[in-house]
Image 1 (cartoon, rainbow, N blue to C red):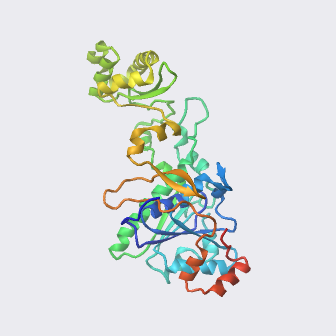
Image 2 (cartoon, rainbow, N blue to C red):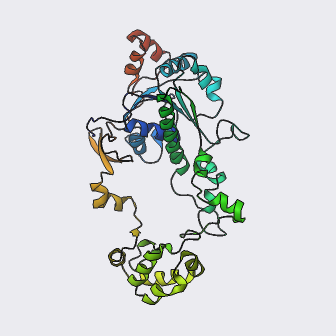
Image 3 (cartoon, rainbow, N blue to C red):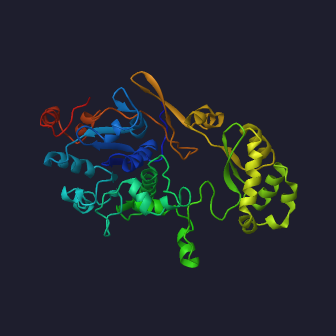
Length: 401
């Protein structure tokens, strides 16, 4: 369990109205770096509590994603539930929500409805396609948004169905964009500009990753294609199978690095040959260069190959799975795993980056049970024990479990 330290976002109150991943990941980051995050869940809790690997009735993912959050479960389909959220939002610096555009307007919880009571509120809205435009009301899961963004098109191999990484990448990248937007809005508010809406779209967050795809098409009529384990126009950078069936990534695409790489694999002739001097020339000879590296790696174990390449200062790295990461001394020394306790049992969850030297983030508690902080949160709004009991008995507020 992380010790209590000074954190950069201490003193800020965040109301998290999102479910599943994009909004909650943004809330997780804000809470890790010191914000008070109140997570408002529907009756039964955020569905992610039951996704993927479940232990003792709760997802292991939730223990990471829900860390440092105070949880209350409200029925927002009731006027009383919406009124409680409205009261919470009056006390907040930031709200993070990822409902379909229009839902919160229908409940009177949209930015315009809240502005009179809290003009300094920063209202981060995460949706598939943004709050405006012809697609704004479409269902926006990360999978579909990664596809339309152009990101999926460049993944995989030519003439095959595009490959998706086995992660909800669009959600996490959108959560990062939301945090970035919130921090910029806080900077603006600190200058006296008041609150504002941060409009984050999943497809636009992935669109932000496309590097030169747009100008290459507009300026040279080139449509970037999928390129397997390589990157178009940068040679050599690829993944190679070693003699022990382990995979090695080699990045030898700098001009001086290429010279060192060829010397490392015993091809001094290619190191000094003028036809490989520049990246543009190497692109022409990509197949030949790749075959040399493929053959060399096939004759070396992963460890032996890395030792030789590192002696020649050639960037390379093994392809790790989670077991490899957790056994690696560098990951451990850099503090990438934090240990929490769940019902008396230890559980490792990932630390959250980046690392701040003077005001680091910490995990203070793992994702709690549903409605764990109900009484604390409602008492903070001025409700007494009878009022809280009445809200629980009426089903507006779920009792802790």
